[in-house]
Image 1 (cartoon, one colour):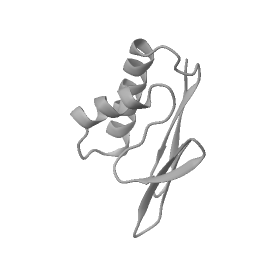
Image 2 (cartoon, helix red, strand yellow; image 1 turned 135 degrees about the horizontal axis):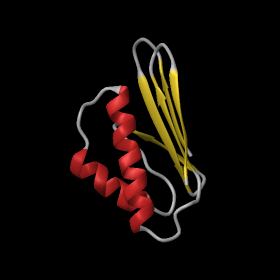
Image 3 (cartoon, one colour; image 1 turned 180 degrees about the horizontal axis):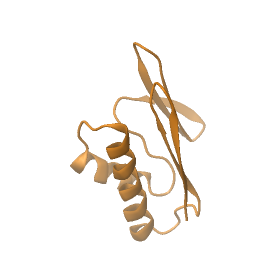
Length: 92
């Protein structure tokens, strides 16, 4: 699971791995494809707005599911801004 939250002064991001919660600085990935997804994100990650970030996340999910056996069938993308959140249909 990946959880993000923000208020006027802070942005926080956490993920879980083997029942341990870890705080992340820029991005997070979980599951069978996490290592591959992190490699993709390390190569291409940069400052971006919410929409660009969601497009980037969708690309990483798509590439990871194509390349890594054992990835879960359902992945949900949710973008968070101060004024609202964006829920994208699940990627199967």
